Amino acid sequence: MTQDPRNLIYALRENVRQVIVGKDEAIEYALIALLCKGHVLIEDVPGVGKTTLAAALARSLNCSFKRIQFTPDIMPSDITGFTMVSMTTGEMEYKPGAVNTQILLADEINRTSPKTQSSLLEVMEEGQVTVDGVTRALPKPFMVLATQNPIDFVGTYPLPEAQMDRFFLRIAIGYPTIEEEMDVLDRYSGQESPLKTLTPVCGGQEIIAMQEMVGAIYCSREVRSYVATIAATTRKHQALQLGVSPRGAIALVRAAQACALLSGRDYILPDDVRRMALPVLSHRLILTPEARMKGYSAETILSQLIETVPVPGKMA
Image (cartoon, rainbow, N blue to C red; front, side, top):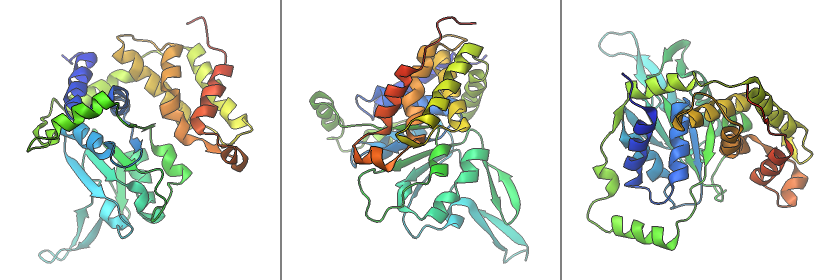
Protein backbone atom coordinates (compact mmCIF):
# COMPACT_ATOMS: atom_id res chain seq x y z
CA MET A 1 0.00 0.00 0.00
CA THR A 2 1.32 3.42 -0.94
CA GLN A 3 2.33 5.60 1.98
CA ASP A 4 0.22 8.69 2.67
CA PRO A 5 1.81 11.37 0.46
CA ARG A 6 1.52 13.95 3.24
CA ASN A 7 3.58 11.76 5.57
CA LEU A 8 6.20 11.13 2.90
CA ILE A 9 6.47 14.79 1.95
CA TYR A 10 6.70 15.69 5.63
CA ALA A 11 9.57 13.24 6.06
CA LEU A 12 11.36 14.69 3.02
CA ARG A 13 10.82 18.24 4.20
CA GLU A 14 12.11 17.51 7.68
CA ASN A 15 15.16 15.82 6.22
CA VAL A 16 15.98 18.81 4.02
CA ARG A 17 15.35 21.17 6.97
CA GLN A 18 18.32 19.63 8.73
CA VAL A 19 20.42 21.52 6.18
CA ILE A 20 18.26 24.45 5.04
CA VAL A 21 17.06 26.76 7.82
CA GLY A 22 13.81 28.75 7.72
CA LYS A 23 13.00 28.23 4.04
CA ASP A 24 10.01 25.90 4.31
CA GLU A 25 8.18 27.48 1.37
CA ALA A 26 11.14 26.98 -0.98
CA ILE A 27 11.50 23.37 0.18
CA GLU A 28 7.81 22.68 -0.34
CA TYR A 29 7.84 24.20 -3.83
CA ALA A 30 10.74 21.91 -4.78
CA LEU A 31 8.82 18.90 -3.46
CA ILE A 32 5.69 19.92 -5.36
CA ALA A 33 7.75 20.09 -8.57
CA LEU A 34 9.07 16.60 -7.83
CA LEU A 35 5.51 15.26 -7.45
CA CYS A 36 4.54 16.91 -10.76
CA LYS A 37 7.49 15.44 -12.71
CA GLY A 38 8.76 19.01 -13.09
CA HIS A 39 12.11 20.73 -13.05
CA VAL A 40 13.17 23.56 -10.75
CA LEU A 41 15.15 26.73 -11.38
CA ILE A 42 16.62 28.06 -8.13
CA GLU A 43 17.50 31.69 -8.77
CA ASP A 44 19.03 33.95 -6.13
CA VAL A 45 22.13 35.85 -5.08
CA PRO A 46 25.32 33.93 -4.20
CA GLY A 47 25.69 32.21 -0.86
CA VAL A 48 22.06 31.82 0.23
CA GLY A 49 21.92 28.05 -0.25
CA LYS A 50 20.80 27.39 -3.83
CA THR A 51 23.18 24.50 -4.43
CA THR A 52 22.75 23.25 -0.86
CA LEU A 53 18.96 23.03 -1.28
CA ALA A 54 19.31 21.07 -4.51
CA ALA A 55 21.92 18.73 -3.05
CA ALA A 56 19.90 18.18 0.15
CA LEU A 57 16.82 17.18 -1.83
CA ALA A 58 18.88 14.82 -3.96
CA ARG A 59 20.47 13.21 -0.88
CA SER A 60 17.02 12.74 0.67
CA LEU A 61 15.97 10.51 -2.23
CA ASN A 62 17.35 7.05 -2.76
CA CYS A 63 17.94 7.86 -6.42
CA SER A 64 20.99 8.19 -8.64
CA PHE A 65 22.42 11.70 -8.55
CA LYS A 66 24.89 13.66 -10.67
CA ARG A 67 26.10 17.22 -10.47
CA ILE A 68 27.58 19.19 -13.33
CA GLN A 69 29.23 22.56 -12.83
CA PHE A 70 28.41 24.58 -15.92
CA THR A 71 31.23 26.60 -17.43
CA PRO A 72 31.71 28.13 -20.91
CA ASP A 73 33.78 25.14 -22.07
CA ILE A 74 31.16 22.50 -21.25
CA MET A 75 30.05 20.81 -24.48
CA PRO A 76 26.61 19.34 -25.35
CA SER A 77 28.18 15.87 -25.45
CA ASP A 78 29.14 16.29 -21.78
CA ILE A 79 25.41 16.54 -21.08
CA THR A 80 23.85 14.05 -23.50
CA GLY A 81 26.74 11.61 -23.93
CA PHE A 82 28.38 10.53 -27.17
CA THR A 83 29.19 7.48 -29.28
CA MET A 84 32.66 6.28 -30.10
CA VAL A 85 34.32 3.23 -31.60
CA SER A 86 35.05 0.58 -28.98
CA MET A 87 38.70 -0.46 -29.00
CA THR A 88 37.73 -4.04 -28.02
CA THR A 89 34.77 -4.79 -30.30
CA GLY A 90 35.29 -2.27 -33.10
CA GLU A 91 31.62 -1.27 -32.85
CA MET A 92 30.04 2.05 -31.98
CA GLU A 93 29.52 2.33 -28.23
CA TYR A 94 27.45 4.87 -26.32
CA LYS A 95 29.16 6.73 -23.48
CA PRO A 96 26.49 8.17 -21.15
CA GLY A 97 26.54 11.86 -20.28
CA ALA A 98 25.56 13.72 -17.12
CA VAL A 99 21.82 13.43 -17.83
CA ASN A 100 21.85 9.66 -17.45
CA THR A 101 20.72 9.87 -13.86
CA GLN A 102 17.54 10.42 -11.87
CA ILE A 103 18.41 13.69 -10.14
CA LEU A 104 20.60 16.13 -12.06
CA LEU A 105 22.01 19.24 -10.40
CA ALA A 106 22.84 21.77 -13.11
CA ASP A 107 24.89 24.28 -11.12
CA GLU A 108 25.12 27.83 -12.54
CA ILE A 109 23.31 26.81 -15.71
CA ASN A 110 23.58 30.30 -17.21
CA ARG A 111 27.40 30.10 -17.32
CA THR A 112 27.40 27.71 -20.27
CA SER A 113 26.81 28.51 -23.93
CA PRO A 114 23.33 28.57 -25.52
CA LYS A 115 24.28 25.50 -27.58
CA THR A 116 24.97 23.51 -24.42
CA GLN A 117 21.87 24.89 -22.70
CA SER A 118 19.74 23.72 -25.62
CA SER A 119 20.98 20.15 -25.16
CA LEU A 120 18.69 20.02 -22.12
CA LEU A 121 15.51 20.91 -24.02
CA GLU A 122 14.63 17.36 -25.12
CA VAL A 123 15.81 15.94 -21.83
CA MET A 124 13.55 18.19 -19.75
CA GLU A 125 10.50 17.94 -22.00
CA GLU A 126 10.54 14.30 -23.08
CA GLY A 127 12.61 12.54 -20.42
CA GLN A 128 14.84 11.10 -23.12
CA VAL A 129 18.10 11.83 -24.89
CA THR A 130 18.91 11.43 -28.58
CA VAL A 131 22.51 10.91 -29.68
CA ASP A 132 23.46 10.13 -33.30
CA GLY A 133 19.85 9.37 -34.18
CA VAL A 134 19.33 6.90 -31.34
CA THR A 135 16.82 7.85 -28.62
CA ARG A 136 17.31 6.52 -25.11
CA ALA A 137 14.86 6.89 -22.25
CA LEU A 138 16.19 8.34 -19.01
CA PRO A 139 15.61 6.61 -15.67
CA LYS A 140 12.49 7.51 -13.67
CA PRO A 141 11.85 9.57 -11.70
CA PHE A 142 13.90 12.23 -13.48
CA MET A 143 14.36 15.80 -12.28
CA VAL A 144 16.63 18.71 -13.15
CA LEU A 145 17.52 21.12 -10.35
CA ALA A 146 19.25 24.14 -11.87
CA THR A 147 20.77 27.13 -10.12
CA GLN A 148 21.69 30.57 -11.40
CA ASN A 149 22.70 33.97 -10.07
CA PRO A 150 20.36 36.70 -11.41
CA ILE A 151 22.70 39.65 -10.75
CA ASP A 152 26.00 38.39 -12.16
CA PHE A 153 26.04 39.12 -15.89
CA VAL A 154 29.79 38.77 -16.53
CA GLY A 155 30.49 35.55 -18.40
CA THR A 156 26.86 34.44 -18.39
CA TYR A 157 24.36 33.51 -21.11
CA PRO A 158 20.75 34.31 -20.13
CA LEU A 159 18.43 31.35 -20.54
CA PRO A 160 16.22 31.70 -23.65
CA GLU A 161 12.43 31.72 -23.38
CA ALA A 162 12.13 28.10 -24.58
CA GLN A 163 14.51 26.96 -21.84
CA MET A 164 12.75 28.96 -19.11
CA ASP A 165 9.42 27.51 -20.18
CA ARG A 166 10.76 23.99 -19.53
CA PHE A 167 11.19 24.75 -15.84
CA PHE A 168 8.09 23.80 -13.90
CA LEU A 169 8.66 26.52 -11.32
CA ARG A 170 11.24 29.00 -10.10
CA ILE A 171 12.34 29.35 -6.49
CA ALA A 172 13.95 32.32 -4.76
CA ILE A 173 15.44 31.52 -1.36
CA GLY A 174 16.27 34.95 0.04
CA TYR A 175 18.41 36.00 2.98
CA PRO A 176 17.72 34.49 6.42
CA THR A 177 16.53 36.44 9.44
CA ILE A 178 19.03 37.12 12.23
CA GLU A 179 17.66 34.20 14.26
CA GLU A 180 17.80 31.89 11.24
CA GLU A 181 21.34 32.96 10.42
CA MET A 182 22.40 32.28 14.00
CA ASP A 183 20.97 28.77 13.60
CA VAL A 184 22.88 28.37 10.34
CA LEU A 185 26.12 29.45 12.00
CA ASP A 186 25.54 26.96 14.80
CA ARG A 187 24.87 24.05 12.44
CA TYR A 188 27.81 24.76 10.19
CA SER A 189 30.36 25.57 12.89
CA GLY A 190 31.13 21.88 13.51
CA GLN A 191 33.78 19.78 11.86
CA GLU A 192 31.37 18.19 9.37
CA SER A 193 28.72 19.77 7.16
CA PRO A 194 25.13 18.69 7.95
CA LEU A 195 24.73 17.89 4.25
CA LYS A 196 27.15 14.97 4.55
CA THR A 197 25.09 13.30 7.27
CA LEU A 198 21.79 13.28 5.36
CA THR A 199 20.37 9.85 4.58
CA PRO A 200 17.59 8.97 2.07
CA VAL A 201 14.04 8.82 3.41
CA CYS A 202 12.30 7.42 0.33
CA GLY A 203 13.05 5.74 -2.98
CA GLY A 204 12.24 6.26 -6.63
CA GLN A 205 9.27 3.88 -6.70
CA GLU A 206 7.55 5.77 -3.89
CA ILE A 207 8.01 9.03 -5.77
CA ILE A 208 6.61 7.50 -8.97
CA ALA A 209 3.56 6.22 -7.05
CA MET A 210 2.90 9.72 -5.67
CA GLN A 211 3.36 11.28 -9.10
CA GLU A 212 0.57 9.02 -10.39
CA MET A 213 -1.68 10.14 -7.52
CA VAL A 214 -1.31 13.80 -8.55
CA GLY A 215 -2.95 13.13 -11.91
CA ALA A 216 -6.00 11.64 -10.18
CA ILE A 217 -6.90 14.90 -8.41
CA TYR A 218 -10.12 16.32 -9.84
CA CYS A 219 -10.03 19.67 -11.65
CA SER A 220 -13.50 21.15 -12.26
CA ARG A 221 -14.52 23.02 -15.38
CA GLU A 222 -14.67 26.24 -13.33
CA VAL A 223 -11.09 25.87 -12.17
CA ARG A 224 -9.92 25.04 -15.70
CA SER A 225 -11.67 28.20 -16.92
CA TYR A 226 -9.99 30.16 -14.12
CA VAL A 227 -6.53 28.97 -15.12
CA ALA A 228 -7.21 29.54 -18.83
CA THR A 229 -8.44 33.07 -18.12
CA ILE A 230 -5.30 33.90 -16.13
CA ALA A 231 -3.13 32.62 -18.98
CA ALA A 232 -5.12 34.51 -21.62
CA THR A 233 -4.99 37.74 -19.61
CA THR A 234 -1.18 37.64 -19.48
CA ARG A 235 -1.09 37.48 -23.27
CA LYS A 236 -3.07 40.73 -23.55
CA HIS A 237 -1.34 42.73 -20.81
CA GLN A 238 0.30 45.90 -22.14
CA ALA A 239 3.40 45.51 -19.95
CA LEU A 240 4.08 41.95 -21.11
CA GLN A 241 5.83 41.16 -24.35
CA LEU A 242 5.32 37.42 -23.87
CA GLY A 243 2.54 35.86 -21.81
CA VAL A 244 1.98 32.40 -20.38
CA SER A 245 2.17 29.49 -22.83
CA PRO A 246 -0.25 26.54 -22.80
CA ARG A 247 2.60 24.56 -21.21
CA GLY A 248 2.58 27.07 -18.36
CA ALA A 249 -1.19 26.73 -17.90
CA ILE A 250 -0.87 22.95 -17.75
CA ALA A 251 1.90 23.30 -15.19
CA LEU A 252 -0.29 25.53 -13.03
CA VAL A 253 -3.08 22.94 -12.99
CA ARG A 254 -0.58 20.21 -12.10
CA ALA A 255 0.88 22.30 -9.29
CA ALA A 256 -2.62 22.98 -7.93
CA GLN A 257 -3.32 19.24 -8.05
CA ALA A 258 -0.20 18.57 -5.97
CA CYS A 259 -1.27 21.26 -3.47
CA ALA A 260 -4.66 19.62 -3.13
CA LEU A 261 -3.09 16.19 -2.67
CA LEU A 262 -0.82 17.46 0.11
CA SER A 263 -3.85 19.11 1.75
CA GLY A 264 -5.67 15.79 1.84
CA ARG A 265 -8.20 16.70 -0.85
CA ASP A 266 -9.06 14.93 -4.08
CA TYR A 267 -10.13 18.13 -5.86
CA ILE A 268 -8.59 21.54 -6.62
CA LEU A 269 -9.70 24.78 -5.01
CA PRO A 270 -9.09 28.22 -6.56
CA ASP A 271 -6.81 28.93 -3.59
CA ASP A 272 -4.49 26.15 -4.81
CA VAL A 273 -4.24 27.92 -8.16
CA ARG A 274 -3.60 31.31 -6.58
CA ARG A 275 -0.93 29.94 -4.27
CA MET A 276 1.06 28.32 -7.09
CA ALA A 277 0.58 31.00 -9.76
CA LEU A 278 3.67 33.10 -8.94
CA PRO A 279 6.30 30.32 -8.69
CA VAL A 280 4.88 28.48 -11.72
CA LEU A 281 4.13 31.39 -14.08
CA SER A 282 6.29 34.43 -13.29
CA HIS A 283 9.51 33.14 -14.92
CA ARG A 284 7.62 32.47 -18.16
CA LEU A 285 6.69 36.14 -18.62
CA ILE A 286 8.76 38.60 -20.66
CA LEU A 287 8.31 42.28 -19.87
CA THR A 288 8.30 44.99 -22.51
CA PRO A 289 11.32 47.33 -22.56
CA GLU A 290 9.08 50.15 -21.28
CA ALA A 291 7.95 48.08 -18.29
CA ARG A 292 11.54 47.17 -17.43
CA MET A 293 12.56 50.84 -17.61
CA LYS A 294 9.81 51.70 -15.15
CA GLY A 295 11.16 49.10 -12.71
CA TYR A 296 8.28 46.64 -12.95
CA SER A 297 8.81 42.96 -12.20
CA ALA A 298 7.01 39.93 -13.59
CA GLU A 299 5.92 38.99 -10.06
CA THR A 300 4.34 42.39 -9.43
CA ILE A 301 2.48 42.45 -12.73
CA LEU A 302 1.28 38.86 -12.31
CA SER A 303 0.05 39.54 -8.77
CA GLN A 304 -1.93 42.56 -9.94
CA LEU A 305 -3.26 40.67 -12.93
CA ILE A 306 -4.51 37.74 -10.84
CA GLU A 307 -6.51 40.16 -8.67
CA THR A 308 -8.46 41.26 -11.76
CA VAL A 309 -9.51 37.73 -12.73
CA PRO A 310 -12.80 36.68 -11.11
CA VAL A 311 -12.42 33.74 -8.73
CA PRO A 312 -14.94 30.95 -9.35
CA GLY A 313 -17.31 30.84 -6.40
CA LYS A 314 -19.16 27.65 -7.22
CA MET A 315 -17.31 24.37 -7.58
CA ALA A 316 -18.66 21.59 -9.81
